[in-house]
Structure formats: C-alpha cells, structure tokens
Image 1 (spheres, rainbow, N blue to C red):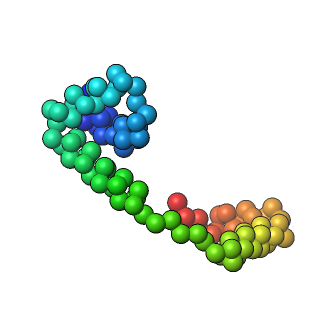
Image 2: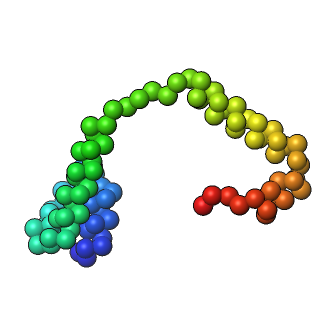
Image 3: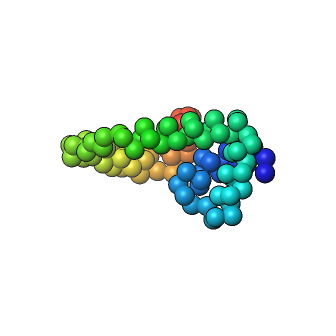
Length: 97
C-alpha cells in the first residue's frame, strides 16, 4: 500500500481502532518499513493525547441564547426581504467558504 493511503488510514481509522485485523496488520507492516509514516503516526498520537487531556468547559446559557437570538433575527430579516432580496444578498454578499 502506498504512503498516501496509509497516512489517510492513520488519520481516520487506525488510531480509533476501527480497522479490521487484516487492515491493521497491513498498516503495521508498512509502519515497520516506512519511517515517514511512523513519524506521521507519532504526530497524530501526540495530538490525540493532547486533546484527551483537554478540559471541557460548559458554555454559559446566556451565550447560547445570544446565538439563538442572532439566528432567529437573521432568518426573520431574510423572510422580510422576500425572494428578490435573498437572491440579491446571495449574489452581492460574499459567504465564507
């Protein structure tokens, strides 16, 4: 298997333990031979460890209410514009990619 495919598997399923035993063996065999892919694995494992240690904070209810209020206001504003206003906004106002 090529390095690009192995690295893709490392990023998606390997570290999560979602591969079949056959697929795991193929990846392990490749990692034994390929220093570049082993380095990718080490980086991904260190990132995974970092995020496992992260503290989860709860967001205050007021912030959720502000978000909901903003969404509601935006929807109401679009409804008031009608179809031509929405088309104008779609064409003129750039949207984030």
